[in-house]
Amino acid sequence: MAMTMRLIQLLVIISVIALALSRRALASDPDITSDYILPENHTSTTADASFFTYTGFRGLFDQAPKTFTATKASMDEFPALKGQSVSYAMLQFPPNTIFPPHTRLDSAGLMFVLTGSLEVGLIDTKNVLYTKKLQAGDMFVFPKGLIHYQYNADPNLPATAIAAFGSASARTVAVPASIFSSGIRDVVLAKSFKTDVSTVRKIRAGLKN
View (tube, rainbow, N blue to C red):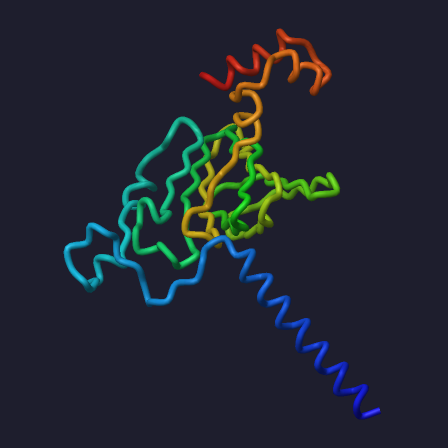
């Protein structure tokens, strides 16, 4: 009996270790061996407080964009994020605008609504659609790799939100653009979506505007 219990404990420990290793292997950003990573063109071997500061969002609330606007703070804009597995984006939705269906293969996203309201939706791998209308102060998580969207349906009021990602460079794959702005032939898309070539061409033209 004692031998059996020890074997079970050993199997549990091995399973936990294997799970931890698999999660590390699937992580979007590799672990780093230092506190932070300086850019190659950095003029000093150490960093000061300015290195850890990002001011690119200043003045955003003073602007009123006419189309949906996403302002990123990834490692491209904020080099101190390299290796830290975090990044940010400010999302601005004028009335009746949408962030079309898209996905992020390397990171989950956590969105916090600052002002206005947003309809959000995501589709899981079983093709189940989850939708919710969010108000200011609400949060919503978009799991990694799932197609999702955000829509400001209000005809009069804008909405703003911030999104946090578990990657220093969370890449966005826009579903409509990746399909209709690619080199896939019109006839293939028409047959795939059970429509005609003229409709496909209208969609392509609309995405170029």
